[in-house]
Image (cartoon, rainbow over all chains, first blue to last red; front, side, top):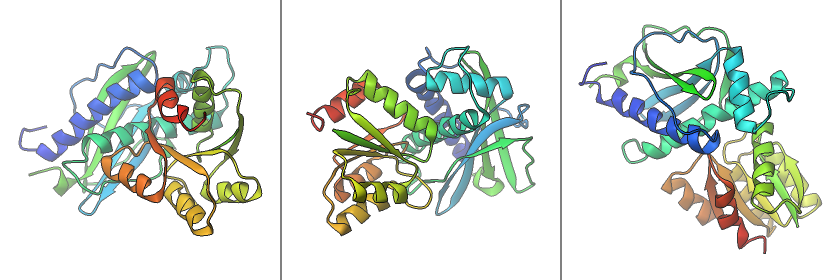
Length: 162
Length: 120
């Protein structure tokens, strides 16, 4: 990521800030360590994405992990013990809420910089992300408790560059 | 008092119920609805003391629910529990008649502060 990509940097910084709030307030953790951002596709194949759109931008924010990581995130969000049973529906629903909470916090952080941001409804994916040439993606890794996750930002290519 | 929780996420409805208990409001009857349309029918059938609604929901979102209640002349204490916490959304909620907007993620302390005056 170059220093001329100020729009992308704003989004990355906002996602980092929002992930700290997610980890401490929603999940009851001490915080989160987010790695540097790179342009690799996520390794994890299970996760949730949410669109954040405005008049002149369309961004997807994602939280990706593996099956075990998604289960751990669900347990933390619901305050459940390790031996409590979870259905796939519970995990799907919880992952949608995780990215919803994250995106809401991102929207608040960016409210001054980007007016009229609108959150869409989250989608939960089981499969690898495939991007097009018109899209730019950036990824950072982090750990939320025992869950290894990847934070993802997907933007239209011309909107990521100054 | 009957509290109606409106959210398309079962997970979030569980979290709101848990936080109500943690905030000391666990003695109140709780009902649930999965979107604004379901909530409107439930409210028309039996008026709750308080509605806690998410904003973004399919079929009928939270602000549409509040506006529908206003249009029908149904008076009910209404608050948002939502990921939408910007000043603009807070103002829009207030203008529509919401008593408060609690932004996710939230704590039991936040529920105590915001709901304490309503559930008195």
